[in-house]
Image 1 (cartoon, rainbow, N blue to C red):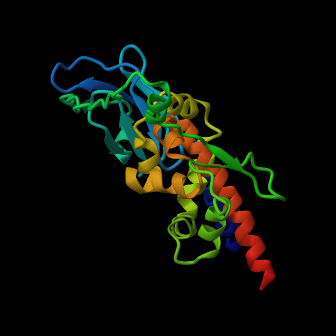
Image 2 (cartoon, helix red, strand yellow; image 1 turned 180 degrees about the horizontal axis):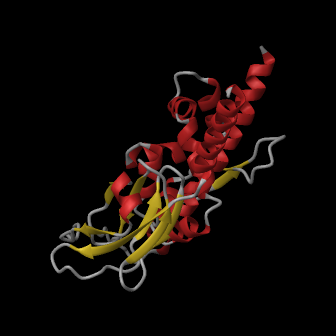
Length: 260
């Protein structure tokens, strides 16, 4: 009898383990709350598993998800939302998710025209010149750091960030190891990479890193990328820049630890 109980207990544990490993997914239809019409090409990202997809022409989507995973939905001109995967969603199947359209407001753009005098020697001095320089660190396989101004100590900026415990970059990278691992997973998902390559709003990056847009720009700035790059880069380029910098941060931090 004892062996029979042990056998059934073993079978139960094994079946439970298999059940835990079964890949589950959720189905949904995304609609406009004001019109009840489906919205196509909505970007859906599972923030827990860092995988993405998009809705089809009828607003339908399917994505791998587990209980309590959070899905982030975003679409140009609509308010982004987060949706938690619940037991009833997994059990009963497809659900409708409504999104609300945003009122678009154009910001005032101020154009500062050059006041030309007609004298070339004077006028040419009014044209702003912005040069970007890149620096590499010996021993690292990176393509180099980019700095907006050519300064003798520009290469020391990222080194100072790594070796100074009170520095902003050190605090960000040191406390957000889990978030940085998510960014690494994002680089491997073609759906998410294609999504980020067409976006410039930094929203997905700020959600995953749990920082605001100002801090996100500051991370890239502290990694010695120029303001020109920060202003012009798409979200995928920003992701690659942060990921590269984080990998180098880990190498230099490891070397620092080995010295003591």
